[in-house]
Image (cartoon, rainbow, N blue to C red; front, side, top):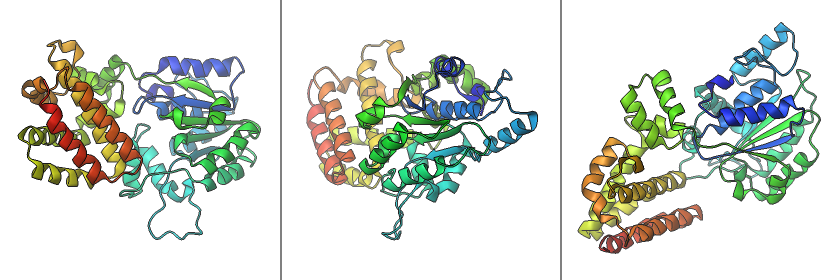
Length: 384
């Protein structure tokens, strides 16, 4: 994968290349940034460069002969290079024996299929491929042992060995402690690329042994250009979608999908607010039971979406278009609803939803969490 396939992120790429040019490439890099900003795409492009793929300017790190370069590029095209290793969160499927220790390779076929669809994807897409239902994905203890075994082998191509760890914050404690030892004393010419969204969940000892590279949100102009060039969207629609995406290419793609998750979330938000305004407790209970049937990851994404809509509806009251980031459907609802989100309740509603996100993440009963939230919204909507 070449860097010109990454949307935006020129600054981060230049920093990575400067490390190589100056001969100070660390053995462990922590690529941190929000969901959809292209951290994984950046990691894949950099791994491809380290493993010998020619970039758009014709450069390559190692002086392979043309045959070796062609072989490397052919393998990287299918993400099957012998010196490229992946580690990622997985589930333990129902019926798996207690003796079996889950590792990433248990879902290698599904992972390769996900990568072949493109470098921009979400945890929900990954969970769907694994048929996770209500399970949360984890990097288990056995994964560190498997990485240690793989990386102790000699490089097949005589150059770097690259290990991309997607969402290392999902490692359990035992795995994190073992991985720490591997990072402290890595095999020769081994580079770890950790793609992280919540670095605060990592062990401080791991963070201290990595060099952090902050990957910012994608520039709105870059998303707008990518929408027109890669997706054939007209300029006006691309501009609106790019603003709503707020630096996330995955959000921009979701907005293009007629059956996107965000459309479902918008419908559930509208239903919640209308039922709360009507004080229809019976239907609110039914609403709570419906969303309680979503997986926990989806519930957290829905609540995050609700938080954004609360903010956008509050800002809509100021009648400053440049301050609002809504799709046409969201704006249509905001015209009549926005006046109910005001200085008296915007903080209260936001804190209520943030607390619900925390409770869902801590495995609280979702029926209780969502029904409690719905009942509180009845009271908060009355505040003026």
